[in-house]
Length: 409
Ligand code: NI
Image (cartoon, rainbow, N blue to C red):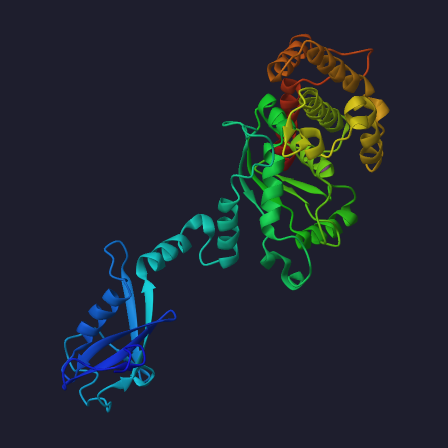
């Protein structure tokens, strides 16, 4: 007696066995010259355990290069199969089974048509999937998120496609750009600035390195301008140049945060005048003080202090004034200005922040300090006034009105 694993005997003379192969598994079913396609389909679902109410399975059953359709019509084996009784299992007619879960297919196709994923752009779909998978990994401590009201509404990275001919070069994946933009948007220092100044930015995006070069050329011909960031329509959209010039990596985080604050300062002031730099420096001071306070609290996130995550060393946080002045000498210098011209309002803001810090002040204190200047509208030593938020908004409104006049005239 031969073992059943090496040979197969049908139950009657008119029947014969066929071997169904699906994902490396094989099962033998018995058919006859009268068996129709529908029955074969039903048997296939059953033997491979594919019959499931939750899933809609679309089967493709292939025999001798042809598809066996699931109908009651003609029998695929009507001509019979020349097999003897006790056929070796390996010699049974082989039928290939391909099963597709159509509920999964449908799910994918609806995902593709989701407008937030932009049509059939596969790259974006991949980014979205990875982003969701990685969502538990917050860039800062638990609970360090954007404010519900004053925030960046959406984030947009440059995709490989935007790089055009550079797509083969080694440069971080767009997925990492999104992570970096999220880190910037949820940076507790940035969140404090956004809240304190009640800012809403439509899109925080990555400045396309290719576009950037075009822009750079434009600026070289007209003189000045920001190469590292771009503010469209007073905060409707802010783009930051995340990548280094050779595209091999990202710029340092502390530099990116500074650029973002620069662009946020453009929400009020368009030109790089003293008003702009005063506003920028005061925001910068607020940013650094938030991180100094967090350092005082000794909060540790994945083995790092928040200051370390922000790329701010002790020297910077202990000497905020000197650090800001140092930054400003370089940045203002490009516009023919020197921070000595705005030293007083910077010192004043830092004094307020120092007092607030000594009093153990949290975010609220910053707001109180601002209101204080609002009421008194301080002008110190006949020098540059310490601009309050209201004054800056007013100045921006006046400037807009002036521009409107000029356009009309
Ligand atoms: Ni600028």
